[in-house]
Image 1 (cartoon, helix red, strand yellow):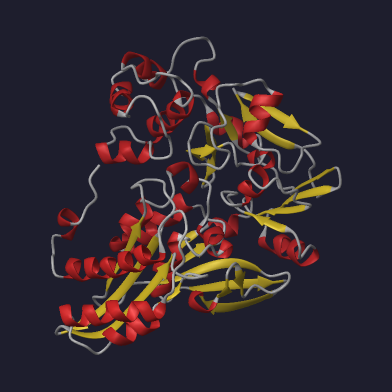
Image 2 (spheres, helix red, strand yellow; image 1 turned 90 degrees about the horizontal axis):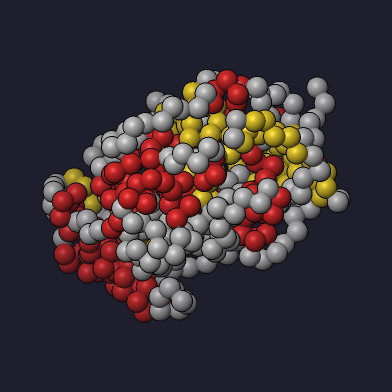
Length: 480
């Protein structure tokens, strides 16, 4: 079967076909500049403010339709292939307001109006996926949208009110989306640049080996900024989002097996189910639109020293399965990073799967994120711990930190100061002193070097306090 060269997706109940697509043209550019749909706004062009929020619908597990909010400002247009695009204009095609829109009006949730369409789309996604959200779920759903006018109270009230209205008829999405199913891979050429969207992992391996300098695109939550903020031109892009084998999340007898292209929204619930102590960190990991597009594999492969997932995965002895051509190899995550943005991937090699060992014994696992804001903020420091005790003697202690060095890495001296010792305040004080030998953090806009180190020491003390209190979920929470 020959490759396709046309991007096909659904918009307002119609199948749209686009030829000669710029591989890195964003969905937001397409909406505003090509279609004249000005509801979606560009506020930041980096997925932070939510003014550009749209909703994507696609078939999941054969015939079930999944709906999720994403940031259109950093999503490349070809990644819409096979999906439905829903914009704020889509909600009221005949000037009949959707309950989310009407509730915003009735509760005075809009002032200047710039952010309003993005909020409405996040509300719409919640409306379609959760019939009775609690306050925390509402806050989490809106965490990716910023407003400078209303103070959020009337917007939160609008979310509650929209459920009181008569529910409009849901569009028949599955049948239309099924018409977009196609076994052929997508290949686009535009002014000397190429975009590949293979369908299976063997084809992906062949492409990566053939184009070793290509940019491997998953969710685009990092790569999108290369284009929108750094104005880079990407000559060859290989998109992993259509490779079904890379999107699976499975639990085996020994580990959680996560495909490298599984989005965070799919991978995180399984991780938190087995490691509840990671809930806080993953709930504060970026925002829902970012988690709905970004992948765990992308976070790992990107290797940012302030990436939030790696510290937790590192203390769990997570391993990575890498592939080049037909050859696979496995490496521990803690051995994957060599220096700032330098990892162990060889030419033509890519991340295939992530293997997270299942809990054993009664080990205590936690991860803490310290940043200026609770929601949707980049960490100044991110820490993770795994502790195994035997009658208050430390059998095994692991600690890893992000934001303190050129890579996320283990705190070897700190671990040595704790292992084999009594789990008490004296041991923790010695461990805090050892942290100064493990890391020499830098000063930047997020925190000074001194504050970073002191914050990390205090987070370790917080972890110690948590292990002494069985009611940690009520004692150690952040206020809203």
